[in-house]
Length: 201
Image 1 (cartoon, rainbow, N blue to C red):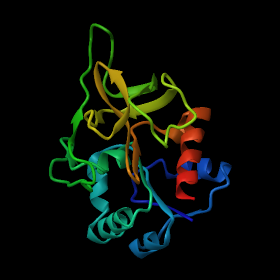
Image 2 (image 1 turned 180 degrees about the horizontal axis):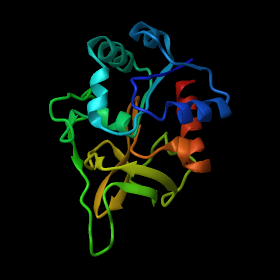
Image 3 (image 1 turned 90 degrees about the vertical axis):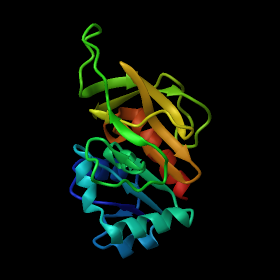
Image 4 (image 1 turned 30 degrees about the horizontal axis):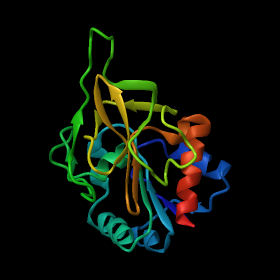
């Protein structure tokens, strides 16, 4: 069973539909304790990093304990950003901090007509082997919508460039994250979600 965490940050419906299409057994936990029984946890998200403040101490403890016990944890978009220490979008809100670094605003480029937010399809440039991306090849196209992004850290397994280069997928042991929306990224996105489900066993 997968726990799909609902903290009011949007895109839950589209992630649920994708998981249902893949035949996944999942719940939307009503209490933090429900996460402790899950084989894997997905933290989705759309919009402002400040929304993650709803993941208060009990939720942080349950999700953190599950991750420390070796259960797979997967952050999507703002959910991936939450895996880091924090974001300049909401400096007063702490991230989970399982990956070192802070989220920063993307830079636009008027010469190249690259605007912020970064919305639309863009490519993944692989930076090593990753279980989450297994079966895909570098250059795979996925769908983004965001104004802030993670730096390229040692956990980065795929990067994307939009004026500047950022981490579009991270992986470290049982911790996984993507800045894009796999549930809106066609076959490539479903493939990534399927890989996560297989990692969860």
